[in-house]
Length: 386
Image 1 (tube, rainbow, N blue to C red):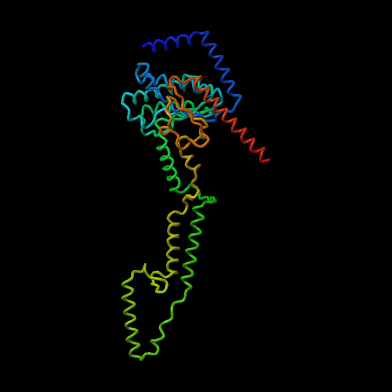
Image 2: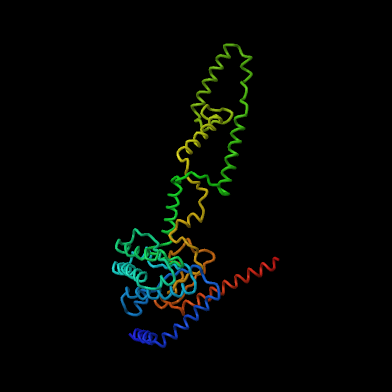
């Protein structure tokens, strides 16, 4: 209770006009100083700690999520003022459906109302030209929520200066599965116009051609190999013995043909079904039949990391900075495809409703310093090489 009263007193003091004006001037000065250095093009946030904040302050869980949404509005203003183009937030995980129905419904209703309020009545998106994108598995969201969320997207679709990606509901693994599924669909149907695309260099394609060439050479050698001449002893035998011998040899050949299946025949005793020329004809028939079934399908060798990226939900540059609050040091299945070797992950030991400029600023400054050190290091290496 004492913590709640102290928090109320602090908010009352900060809301006084002189204090509020002074803090606003300091905030503008700090944000302006950030622009003197490099600014991340894309920042991602894992907004963790709303429920713990609610338990700590002895309020309903939904109230904690409401306070987290207010903190988000302040953080977005700092990002867009400093020049960040893309902001991605982890608003609702697919795993959150395992929570109580009361909490899930509260989060859905809050997303339905708050996003529309920010898009319709708030000046944040219009002032900075930010467009809202809702990313995730839409089939899991209620129809009434989808209707209002799409309304917020529609109201901001003409804004082109910045983007707010709201992952709702979302997991990184589901996004990767979705991307692979869409890629398979693209490469399983013929394009509207037949267009020959140059196949890029591919190790798989080169190895396959080398292996195929070696197999054809071995088949050609087998075809050119002469058969063994008949046994000369039969010529010196009497006619009756020769006839008997030829009959017995024919019987032997037939019994041998029955004893050994065609797959066990060698090149010295070829079977009519396994002649090299027949095998080559069969291979050509299979190739021609497969081409006739799918004449204009795209070449799967053209599939690359860029192909999968185009089919993901978050189709934008990878984040340079990822921030998670609440002191938990894990990604929790967020942006597993987009986070790469140049993404700096900052795990801040504060709950999301408490996250503000004073907690955000050190992370940005530290990122700027690391970028300057990397640039200076590359410049020093270039000078040494020269």
